Structures are given as C-alpha cells and as structure tokens.
Length: 229
Image 1 (spheres, helix red, strand yellow):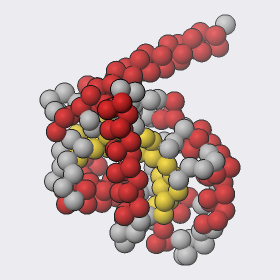
Image 2 (image 1 turned 135 degrees about the horizontal axis):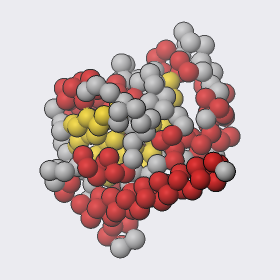
Image 3 (image 1 turned 60 degrees about the horizontal axis):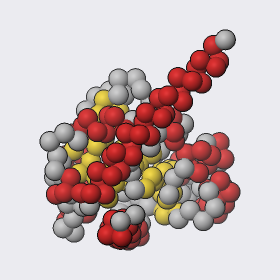
C-alpha cells in the first residue's frame, strides 16, 4: 500500500516544481538573462570551473552572477566571491539537489535585467538534479577525467537531460590514463550529438570554446524572446 502513495507524492512534488520552473523561465526570458545550470558529481571541479568562468566573463565585460547549492557551509560562495561578481549560497540542509522554489526565493533583491548570465551551481549529485527543472536555458554536466570513462553509462539520466558535456581536469588525462575517445563514445551513446568540451580550470584550457557556446546560447535565447517564443 505504500508504493502508490510514494509515487503520488513524488509526482506532486515534481509537478509543483515544474510549474515554478515555468514561471522562472518566463521571468528570465523577460529580463533577458541567460541561465545555465551546472551539474556534476562531488569533486568534479565544478566550483573551480565556475570561478574561472565568472572571472573571465567579468573581464570580458559581461554582467554575471551565481547561485551556489550545497548541503551545508558557505565555503563555495566565499570562494566564488573572489571573482568580484554577485554570489549567493543556497544551503539545502540535507536535500541532494536544488529546486525551483529555492532559486525563486534566493533571487529576491536582484535585478535580473542587469545580468547577462546567471549560473546555478547545483549540489554535487548525478541522480536527483536530473529530475528538477530550474527554469534554465541550458544544463551543463561536468565530468572529471579522474572519474574514468564509464560515468555516463552508470548515470545516463543526468547526461541525457543535459545540453552540453564538459570534461574537466583535462590536464590530468595522461597521468590518469584517461581514454578520451571512450569517454566521448559513452557520452554520445547516452546523448547522441551532445557537444563535448575539454577544459582545465587550473591551466585555462578550453574556455574560449565554452564562451563561444555561452554566447551562442544567449543569442539564441534573445532571438526566441524577440520572436515571442
């Protein structure tokens, strides 16, 4: 008798989240801000990647901000603040993912029309975040070379629900005996034709291609907004 009830509750939670996410998406579209949700397992280098992204985009003249999700502590927010852009920490207190309601609540006081990009660093988890829409324009899944090549096959839903795959810590590929071709093959087996970028926040590798993707994403979002879609 428990299983039907559990399914019903889960469906209700996701329905509410999707409704809130739809409202957020409309709000982001109206403000002209491009929103990117970063997902990965713990330790994949998400914060280092985002720190470098924020710093460089600010230097290029873009107006950027970030929301950072963690179960506890404000460590990542303090680290990202070094980039000189607005950052807010979302402590989930044990919840293994961010939800649309958390995003909505933590946007209070921010003028979204003053931003070009808003980045959401999700909680380190390859399972739960895949089910929760946050109103983003794109979801980027980060995969570190230290994780091996078969993570996409073990966690297909998060890769299948993402719009771009970012391989991080590529400077360690040789020492980790990382098989680039096998990793790309596994990613494309789960999500055919998804763009794959190789990056290293430590060495500054791959960020030009990342920024080209972001610019194209923002231009596409602006075109959809102007056309009324």
